[in-house]
Image 1: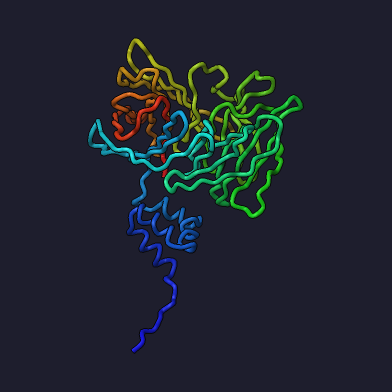
Image 2: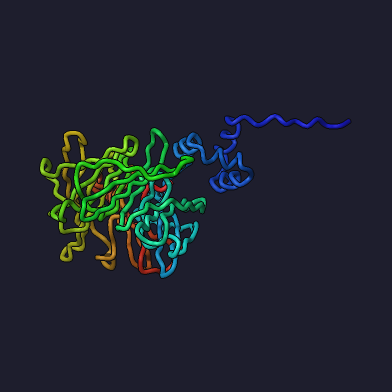
Length: 361
């Protein structure tokens, strides 16, 4: 008796249920089975489900810069809290030649890294270190050297690139939306003339924040680009107690529990401690800032070879080494509990330049 061929497709909800019981590597292999499987994994619904499922845990992402390439690793971000010192292994994911992506790196933004390389012969590149996928973007045509950042709209589920070009005639801002059939740059209005961003930005809840020079390089401003509405404005430092222009220490924009944070740090040579100054934007509309100061001890050999990598979703400040040392250490400082722990990362190759990113999924 000839067996009937059952061609009924498996319902999507059953597929998701099967994937929910699978490992991350098995899910990645599933995406290679067919075009349909790949499209299912790339859909916004699956991405939301994957990032919110209980088994998904954020990781620390390490970008190791060598002479001619980038190499990407990741390690668990939340080691066992019952121990004050942990040893974890870093997993290798992919490598990218510098002649394709250059030296600047921005992100991660909802899992993607962005290599701007504006103003050079190399076009902007977006990559996903976990999957190894690399996408080249359309480069804006300009005789000046533009600077660009990547943002994500969680409502419309769209990635957009903001590019700022400055010339003697003023500044121009353009936006590129990814994932559309017609890929083209659109000009947007900015009420303030300013130079391209000079510090890395950060995207929080659909708003891309960045630090830029003001007109004639007289002050620093924090730009706020709403990715969904494509409106650009600046925070008014004069109405706050926070002034990044007068800060002589290194500064970094961070995501502090869903709010914009500005953190500066310095090394106290006499007490062998790190000193932090954290400003938190409590009210975006009223532009009210909350200022906090902290100190915590750091392994003596680190000193100036460490920097603030970011703040985790639970509010821990992570300090990472940026040079080759053995052991390679990462520090976790919880300002609310006034506790700290040290984690040793194994498996990273020798290099003179490391970049660490928090809450990578």
